Length: 389
Image (cartoon, rainbow, N blue to C red; front, side):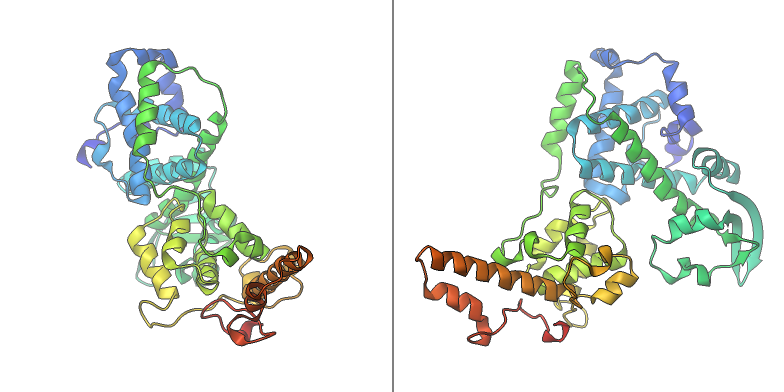
């Protein structure tokens, strides 16, 4: 960290507009990387991407170069490489890693630097405001709109506005809290830089082509599409809310704590095994395998209280902003599991009718319709409660 701390401000925060303007003075172009003299920049760009893929939110300053030009130039080069790789989930993980690294630097900066980036780059309405209230030392006040924009994404009680000190329309925050709110702004900013480079045809010199191939070969195998082995667990039988949550995860987006719980509990209750659930959550930019495994197994009743959690009902989903079109597409069900069961029964009935029309009637279809509950009974996912019908 000591080496990184000595870097100029622009090298520590290469996503800033001033960094790009400063780098332009060096006159670097894509063709420049034919020259072996710039190999360190290519290596650092590769490291930025692979560290993001492997560590996500847990990146640290250990691979930061002590060379100002290497740090400055490797950032836009890694952005270009990401755009050429074309993996949205990897791009999000990179944005998360870069924002996490920036946060570690910001925690060490003087107030003037933090204030400059918050105000001038992200347009945040923030002021220095030193106050000690209730044993907490506040450093800044933030406009209500800027506070809510970030804090609404957090689930911990201390971020709820009702638990904050608000004075004349401004929310008091500590230095650590302000920097945490800035983290999401930085992540969105970096992701936007990648998006702007997406799809642009670029002819690369051989060293960059080789670097891209090396990155592709070293990407974690876990970054793959999610599939479930259960024939009845396919997304076509899922309610709209769960389909959307799945699509967001596959796109590499982060979900709120409640959304994560809702989707995981739904998957567990329709019979998807914990390993397959983890395969989906591996697409999160901030995926931590150890933490995710514990949470999924806890929901499945394999850890902790050994209680298997059911899926939140539709009213709770609506309260948390996860219901799609106020339930208009779901036929008046009260729980996502009910939608799923009805969709499964419709699919089974359709398959049976097709078999009958084709003269292929057999016991298999009838038994599938009866399930374990006997003739004419409903088919339920293992462990699902009938109380949600």
